[in-house]
Length: 378
Image 1 (cartoon, helix red, strand yellow):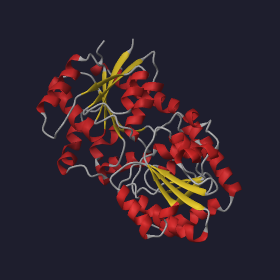
Image 2 (cartoon, rainbow, N blue to C red):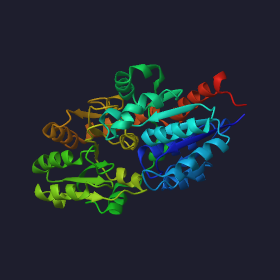
Image 3 (cartoon, helix red, strand yellow):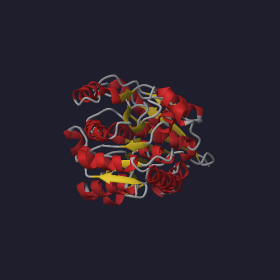
C-alpha cells in the first residue's frame, strides 16, 4: 500500500524548510509514499523541482491576512484530497493546516516540523498562546536539532512527549564534484588570488552578517589578501553595503545575489562562516562542509551538533567579533590545518547528515503515525 502525504507550508521559495521538503520528495521511499505539497501562497522556485521528482503541487493563492476564500480552498483540499497524513511546516502550516484539518473533520494524523526557534521568533503573540492547543492535534513534532527539542520541551512541558529530533540532511553527493576554483571565482567575479571568506543565507537581522563585516575589518587590517563574499537576498542588503563602506572595506566585500549555482560559490571559497544569532541546523553549513570547507560559526542552536570544535572548524562566542576574526585568521594562516578541517567536516556530513538518513528517519515516523489504529484509513 502507498500512502499519500500532504505537506503544507507558507511558500515554495528557496528557503531551508522548502528545500527540506524538496529533499523529502526526492529521497523518501517511493514504494511506500507519494508526496504532495501545498503552498499557502503561490508556487515558488522549488515547485518545479518538486514536480520533476513526481510530487504534486497545490497553490492556495493567499493574498492577505484575512482571506476566507483561501481558507475554504485549503479545507476542501484536505477534505477531498484522499490524503493519508498531513505534514505541516512552521507557523503558517500549523496555524492554517491544523485549523483546516479540524474544520474538515479529517481523521488523518498530523506530523509537524519546527524548523526554527519559536522563542526567538517574531511570531505574533496570539500564536504563542494557541501553540499548545494546536500542537495537541499533532502526533509528533519534529525538531531539526536536539537543542531545539530541549528548548521547546522546556517552554511547553505538556508537549514534551510529542517532540522528536530528526536532524536536517542534504544530498551530500551533489557537492562532491565542484568546478575548479578559478572557474568558480570567475563566475561570481571574485578576485582570483585572494583568500576568500564566504557566507550564504538570507540578509536579515537574525543572520547577523554585520558582525562578520566587523570581524572582516579586523582580518583585513592584518591580511592584505583577505576578501569577503556574502551570498543572499534580503532587506539588510543596503545596510550591509553601507557598513562595509563606513568601515573602509567596500572594495574587499562582495554582496552577491542568491543563485541556483551555489555549488560554484562554495567552490570559490577558502573558508565558510556563519554569524547567526539563532539557528537550527543550517543547510548552508552542511553544504559548505560537504564541499570540504572548514567552518567558523557561533555555538548557538544546533551548530554544536554539526561542527567539532578545532577538528572540523571553530566556534566563537556570539557577539565577539574579535574572537571571530582570530578564528578566521587561524584557518587562513595555515592551509594544512584548513585542509584537515575541511576533510573532517566532509566526512561528518556524508556519514551523519545525509539526505538518505534524514528521509529514512522521517519515513519511519510517518509509518508510526499511520499504523496507529486510531488513524488507519485503509
